[in-house]
Amino acid sequence: MAASGIAGAGLTLLNRFSSAASSSSSSSTRCRTRSVTMAVSTDQKPKTNEKLTLRKSEEAFAAAKELMPGGVNSPVRAFKSVGGQPIIIDSAKGSRMWDIDGNEYIDYVGSWGPAIIGHADDQVLAALAETMKKGTSFGAPCLLENKLAEMVIAAVPSIEMVRFVNSGTEACMGALRLARAFTGKEKIIKFEGCYHGHADPFLVKAGSGVATLGLPDSPGVPKAATYGTLTAPYNDFAAVEKIFEDNKGEIAVVFLEPVVGNAGFITPKPDFLSSLRKITKENNSLLVFDEVMTGFRLSYGGAQEYFGITPDITTLGKIIGGGLPVGAYGGRRDIMETVAPAGPMYQAGTLSGNPLAMTAGIQTLKRIKEAGTYEYLDNITGELVQGIVEAGKKAGHAICGGHINGMFGFFFTQGPVYNFTDAKKSDTAKFAKFFWGMLAEGVYLAPSQFEAGFTSLAHTSDDIKKTIAAAERVFREI
Image (cartoon, rainbow, N blue to C red; front, top):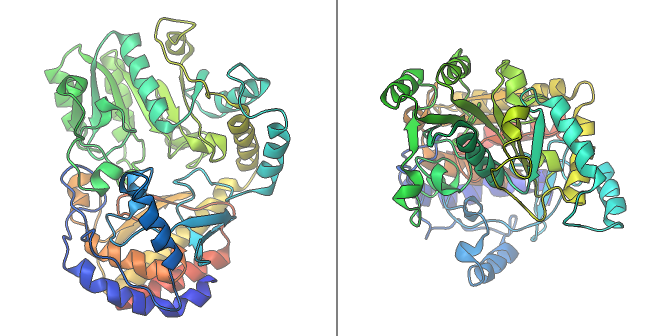
């Protein structure tokens, strides 16, 4: 069913869902952290009608819950923060996705960022088919690793050497261990609501799915694993200064998302990143940019190129594998030579640098390096966010939003949003109603207020116009 075909179903689905959402907590929004509560009861689910059937998704999810914890393999997919149950995706191409019931959606999740050239790109698929003929994994070096490494090093200002891994979580784990090994210190500073994967030391006031589900710092994480994790509000440099003063000579690293994406979309205040760069140098500490989301998306050289601030170490995610499982961490040569087998810090992975991920990454980076890529992303994403925010305000809603090239977000609060305290003012129950209304209109947004959105080169001006028109209809009903 095309987006236009779904449009008529939107009001019925939205109205049936509204009663469940409005009775729920409307607390925190943008930043995901332990004190955030769910917007709606997980026992409530929106009913469908003949124009937007999710029957097959319902049946498949019921079966999945008997097979996998919560029926999913990553928590945010379970739709807990918006109520109801997830739709089960069958296929994706370009800017569109189709579920197993045949409904079609304009997709603004993009596999959580890496689909920057669009889903199932023909050139990437053709290159993968040729590579696959030679084998899918060797557990040994392959020439493709060299080629992608050269491209990453040439693109990212901070990276002189790189180590490929298999996920953003693994990249952040490696970067943290490396920072501690290189400095000989153990304490780290991270920011409230920032998410760096599910490794034990990072699950303190974490963003992403931790806050989406309203969970405390995760059970199973021993206190000893997090004793060295110190936290500060994002964009609050004075708090960072105090931590350094109270822990003189003990801070190994300041670890952050240069633009927060796992707590919604929060940009740094002027001078925030440069102040962090200065204080880490003054205290012989390292600065790590987690660019799992921002890398190659805000610009070809990532957030560090965009803002002109060079960290010591950078982590990257699946965008450098075209959406296949891959990640990387890299930095100055003297730091990276601490990693085994060049140095004593151990980290390994059988599938790291596998030929399929390397091939998809090479093809993807080639495409986004072409002239006009980021200008195009900036234009369509700016039009999208401006259209949604204006439509919301016209309908009488408190809403704010922003974007940088192909990454965006909006909050149901007057704003501005600089940190988690600001984000808690957002109306998560209203977001849940908006999410389901847009889904019924054929627009797939992240199923959480606490996630950034993403556009791609496959999104067209027509996609943007249809999305804004859908938002106008939904805003009038909520």
